[in-house]
Image (cartoon, rainbow, N blue to C red; front, side):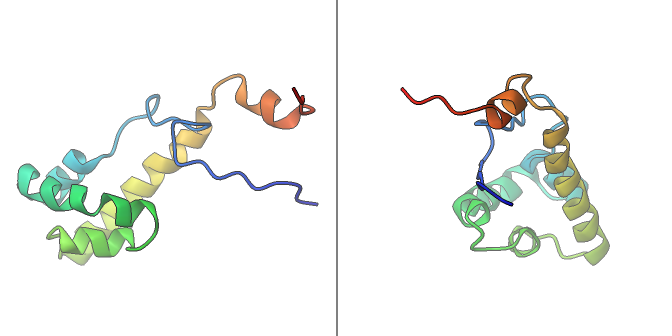
Length: 104
């Protein structure tokens, strides 16, 4: 039985700081695009990407990634980098989530 659902947008329970990054500059390089031009659009789309108003694929297309194989490779790398974050939990997270709650 599910007793709770926890949403985390990083740096609360899950951190991006202990895994290899795959951020906008990395994506621009893999796409063969000018980093500054790519990042200008990428950053403008940050809220839409974060809140699911635009898919990663569509955000990349808006940034100028048109080659389908390059697009697939970037999406795979981005998802793999995010998934890796769940392999590096802070040592106190699991006990905190599985232990009995204390009320103050």
